[in-house]
Length: 156
Picture 1 (cartoon, rainbow, N blue to C red):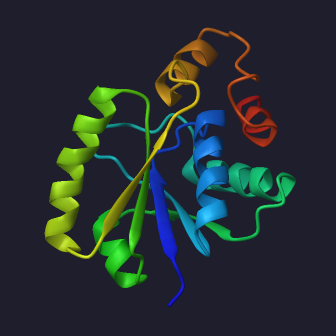
Picture 2 (cartoon, rainbow, N blue to C red):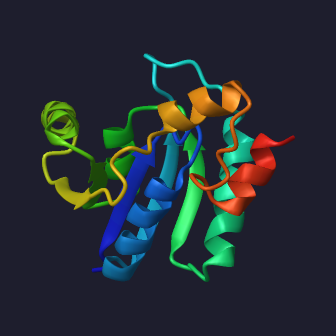
């Protein structure tokens, strides 16, 4: 049975921190689904399909071949059931992230009781999509916080 994981997020935008989690995950799992999900609490700043394309370019630039990227509008836990995914990947910057993730995990476990969570420690705790989005909106150079393909997309 292949080890398949999911790494969901809004990825609005996809940052170097997200890429770090993908690189770690790709080493451990046979396949990783990177899922750009809909978050009812957030309004997207960047087009999800364009972000998907930028993430795919980033993966290709890093030689990562065991990750697929998609946009999904439904519940992530239902996606894991439908795609026979056993592991949920999450990155943690601090204890607030952990507490938030544990609450979401309990809800997801109601839909997919077999789902196991794998937490990776974030390397650069100051970088977040929100921070990048804010800095970019004020014209600051955020190229050091995002992969090149994402930077190129942000410049469009």
